[in-house]
Image (cartoon, rainbow, N blue to C red; front, side, top):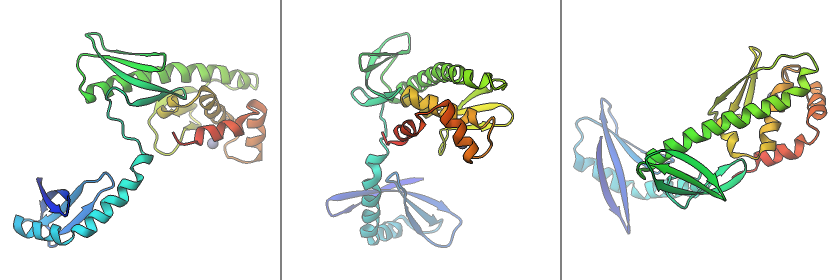
Length: 233
Ligand SMILES: [Zn+2]
């Protein structure tokens, strides 16, 4: 991969070139703001630069289009001062050089003790902490919520935690409740709501009337909580 750049008015367009066995040259603008040129092996760098220059108006238009959506997907950099969510509250990240690596959530601050302030390292420590906290709070929620179902004669499903792209949770007939790790960033009621929802699937496979009758019975406030859950960050 070759990295190059050209000037377009006031701006600099950076692009990577990937050579392969292909006949034509294409330019791709990715949603993350990177520009990729796929080129046949024999095309000269000069020729590629000319093509990028010629298409620069089109490239900039696409870069600006993707930039508009950027604020919707906050990209964390794991540096002091930015905010991270935990159980529905915002915490300000603070890094602290320390030989024993851990996270302490206290008075609105997420204090990360780390051997150095490398963002990659901080991210790993925070991710590990989120997983530990998720296990703690999700297990507690499952235990509490299950009480209502125990009386109905069900046996308690086991808990799995995963990163899921499109769902907050799922229930498998094998007896597992899987919860999305991201739920740890939401208020506790939201965790309970998703757990209750999945537990209802032990009795009702689909989202029919029977399902909602049961959900109302075990978690009457579910509508408001669902709305809270779906609110963007
Ligand atoms: Zn469902």
